[in-house]
Image 1: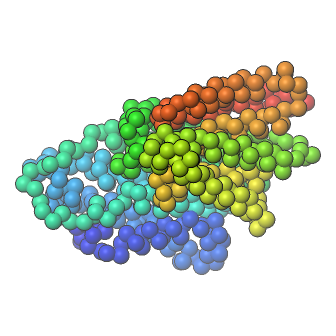
Image 2 (image 1 turned 135 degrees about the horizontal axis):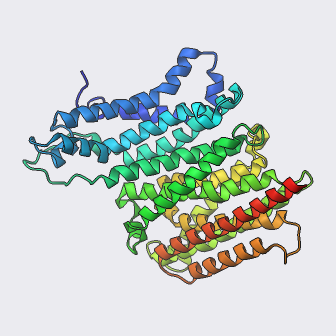
Image 3 (image 1 turned 90 degrees about the horizontal axis):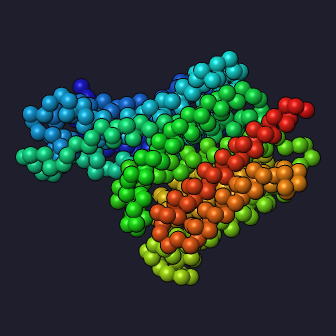
Length: 452
């Protein structure tokens, strides 16, 4: 029989779940090492999703049986609650997060069975599964630390006679599904771009994920615009609402994956063999560093939480320096075999910027200062890539000029603003505007190459 409050009654449950998800983060290496040990490999693959499924089943049992040992039941339901209220609590409360994590882990495990990978080679299937598991493992660890606090699984000391907290409406379930899909598609794009240079078998996966991400991303940002993220006070304490903070984290991450990272990957595949990758990477790194330093410093100065003037800038620059250090360090990974992308050093630099967004929040609240800066830097990455690749005269590069004008306007508006939410809006507008120009430029380049 399933015990009530599984994670509370079994003290080792959450720590083991955390460690098993952390082990998934190294699937890119462990999958191959365990291939000859079938039982150990199956245990390694199935432990995280099955343990999360245990949490879901345990919570469903508690809610349907109205167990007062469950904190959600004690605070939100009385003993006369209807079945519709029970199901609503299960699908909008902590159970929704547990179900989303289970779906996310399961999707990574069965990713090679996607229709867009039908007919691919066993090597590509293994590559996709291991990289999707790595992506899911990294995010699962972060989600467990942010959204699965121990008090959510501890029995209440006192049980109120009547419910004291309202059950969330169904929009909460819709948002959990939406942002889970964003994470899934982000993993698809990252995995596909890491394998494009080896073969074209992940091209269809990449294209379909981009299309889905664009639609879901627009809806996600439209939902976020209705929340406290776009108020003046939210940035002082971002983690007072963990779900909202994770939503912004995933939306920013997905936007960077689907726009600057995807564009750069495709653009790099069009380069001629004689092009200088070192020059491209040097310019890209320089512009990104400059944007991060300026915008993050201004964000810190605008918030007044990190001091004012030079004190605020120094607080922001510490996070920027750490992110750039690991970004530069990641460029050495191709020397040990991780070089399946067209331009592996640039791929790893962008991937480090992406993962620095959520990982930085676990280390310091100052990491939130980097979010508008990284979005604005994404626009500069696209512009640098177009400028270095398009060898026509400046007058003929109208898409570059148009994108540069849009980026400079948004950058000017951001730098003259002292409101963090406006800075985020202008940074988002900049990367979207430049990405539109970059997409038109890419289409023109493909048509030109087809005619040749």
